[in-house]
Image 1 (spheres, rainbow, N blue to C red):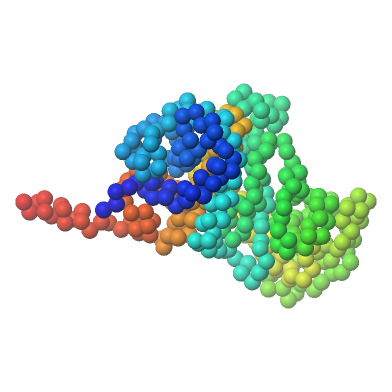
Image 2 (cartoon, helix red, strand yellow):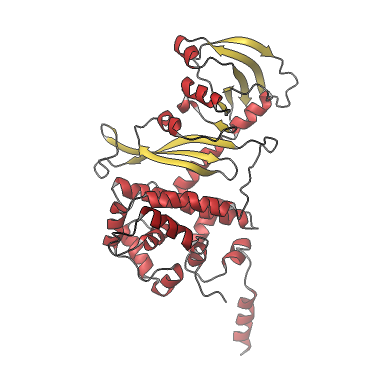
Length: 390
């Protein structure tokens, strides 16, 4: 019989010594004011897994499971004032660094696999950003427009597993390309992005690093055709044209002097004509289209975290508190993705999140349950028969 809760078993996936190293690196327990970094992490993960809406919910929720706190590595439930204080004052960087350390740790235990593009051996990355609206009266530091507040989450996903290998939370008015310029993208990789990253000088930098990119072309792109290729033999019937082009706009030609590939593709599934650009001239046009279609993976990622995690409403109003909640949400989605990958049952992520929340403090074996969530325990029927036989 299992004697610890489902939540405690999920928390046990986190190596305490790894987190302790990050705490030591940042000296984040120097002024802990009642709860140390581990209690803080557990509190914020409980907020994510248990869908707690406020610091009061976090405090009361953990207080109600007093007998199980030791299994979480905690000695006491934090007060709501303590959670509020550390959210405001403990540097979010400790949680940010721990996310990357945990990603590396879990990647060694499970192979995060790609859904498609198996013939492409290079690493593929998906780049995009999403805006989360905030009340300007509560989050006065997050001014976006005259009467609107917002933050923007910039994410670079590794296509193998669709988990962030880079994330940055900025104010809503920071343009995507500003953050992209500061990224250290791996050489000899492929990056897929949309028109928010339309910057020819940055594209030229990617060229110099040996990075291939695939993106969409704007309607007003000024170019000349250098070569028009025959597309009659393309395996994908949606390919309409395939051309090598050169930019001819005065500033664009100065910023990007190389040759680009322009592919027109009819997306039958969504009824859209896509005009794609890439700096790779050896792929087939069908491959270019296939790569760009996988960009939808980052849209799915944003939809998943917005629908299933606490990143649209926040338990603290300071910039640091918002950062902490975002990074603990990313730690949560990392743990959930790991569980989903290791399970033999084919979970839908939203169902997995809901089922864990409903069974958070039930004492059942995590791996038996996650592999066979709908198997009825055999002892229930026998117990009922024993009751009536007496």
